[in-house]
Image (cartoon, rainbow over all chains, first blue to last red; front, side, top):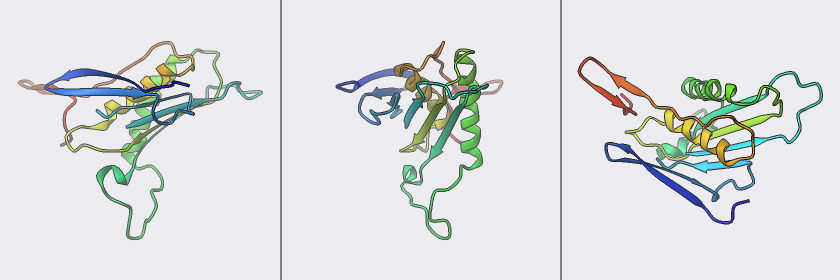
Length: 37
Length: 129
């Protein structure tokens, strides 16, 4: 299980960023990510 | 958007197909509303949710090994919606990212984009009309 959240952001173009974060929510699942968009 | 994946460690005895289930669901609370009137619970998936679930399922199913028969469940929940962004492409990306950080064997990681185009105009990830 991850000890701390890992977050990755990238630019979609047009001033829109997408962020994907893991290790914070649903840690008992095999894999869980949040994508705030 | 929250995407979670869970898989059995061992396949069920006699399993002859790959039991992958993908569920995309939009919560009423994502739009700042709660279900009221006659239907007070968020029940079965509506047509849009079913279609998005199928889109993600069709894209992910061929990426698993042919001899992998463990039950895999992928659940994507829209927690907060944006009126200017269609969530279907982001749902596929989130599901793929969840599989990538897990131990579930998957050959490739995918992404998806929606494109809107005409003769003089094109745009990716269009806002809902």
